[in-house]
Length: 133
View 1 (tube, helix red, strand yellow):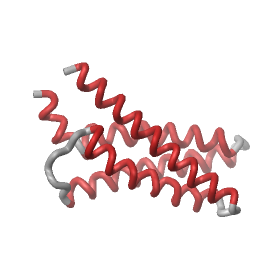
View 2 (cartoon, one colour):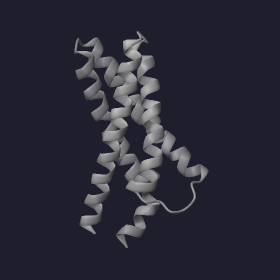
View 3 (spheres, one colour):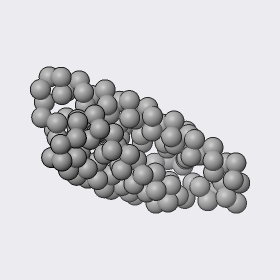
């Protein structure tokens, strides 16, 4: 049971790395084209969220039932909350004088913590009951 929980966390982290690479890639590409950093954050985070849903549902949490509206709404709520946290942290650290890279890293970590807890407990929690039994 503990081994499977650790494997789930490892899969989540692996997907998270992919999401982060997509997020950072889109963010800094848009920034290079002088898109305002807060708009770039919305666009880059959205790209990472789309990747996250597909990979976390299929691979991380191994959900086998067909996606329903409730699951998608819960996923979106968690990601909107995580996006809000990243948005606020990015803004605060930028206004505090940190570099764009440091601000983005801190904001990303804050969002990832919220995202894992929400996905693990609320979004894909039903599928995890099978693992624990």
